[in-house]
Length: 143
Image (cartoon, rainbow, N blue to C red):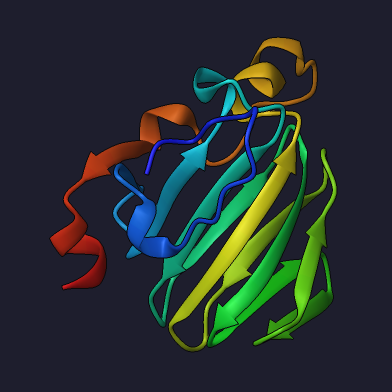
């Protein structure tokens, strides 16, 4: 299904057409919509496999709703985990790390879109770096 910012639509993980891998981790992002699709919000699924750990620094505010497994984030000495039906709020400019103790699937919404955030961000280099994100086949994500 193609995202249309002018209509009410329903999406599921099966509607993601393009998946991206973060670095060499088993961490995958599948976008439903971003600025290229005319959206004011970034809409994406993530699938991280158990054992994934990587640092993040977003240029946007994000909410991740866990739909399978659990997602753990470490910020300094504090650790926050969310299970099925719970969400994490990840504020722009906060440096943290994902620590995945079991496979997780989550739906994430962020504002502004990644494209817009990249243009207006004036803070330190975002993590992970754009160069660490590359396309993968759906079989690599779900196989």
